[in-house]
Image (cartoon, rainbow, N blue to C red; front, side, top):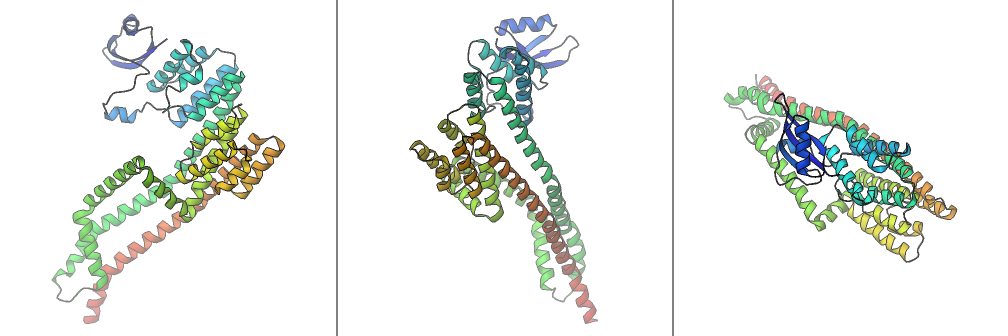
Length: 406
């Protein structure tokens, strides 16, 4: 049954938004009137928003977040394991959700299922919310008749990914605060404190020390052009991101440059290796053919040179090359990962070995982040101390010079 987003006025005169199921818009309006609501606006839940870009739309995006996807996947898997039919499980999940855009999305999927479409086909109607990995795994579960087991595996995966993202965000809070406070303190010193302190020296006929003159120039630039510089920097970053998103050749060059950076390059290789291995493991364990699983897994690699190299590896596998040899020739997988995949091929436990590779790589990423943060925090403190020392010396040097003259 189709679902509709509605905006209505209650009997108490309050505006209410929500989602309602009905055969058509006319029935939806009648159901709202039966609830003593006065319908103001209705639109199909699966209908994409128009070109209106209000601030409220920005705060309430229609795509599923990682946390929302993990939650509804776990709820759906639990309900199916309890023996509920797919359409009833989807209805229960939608009723459990408190977010209108999530509820509307699930009801839209349910309406397709009720019409006779497969669950994977209904999910593919919303590619921005459900990835190709998610849809392919669901399709494999439907074909094999073990949809609840596949959903449980997907729920584990999505929860793990959501937890990793949350850990990364939490780990970045403290260094981000340090940077913000450091920039604020230095900006305040340069824009307000330094000009007032150095104004005392303006009546002196003696030339100021070079360090003090440099500080005055920097302070003058920050005072007059600081806000404009921040705005220009923000615009530059915005347009650079748009340019990299649209221009594939520039994006590839940027990715090549990122891979050459000492710590960042290793982190990018390791994270994409983990993502590829984890995805391939899930798809293989769900019954997806290896070549199809590799093709889907490649699309989740975000670094273009690495994706291109593994696409070549997939082509070699199609031609008969062993998976571990093809991945070894790609030169992006560590020797240990290649040996583990080779062992999995030989023993017939490829999906288990791929999962171990993913776990190992994810542990490496965690250690890299910890090391980077451990080095980053004292480095910021040292840089902040050096800047403050420079400002203090630049202010005090003229005083020392006056004492020598007297």
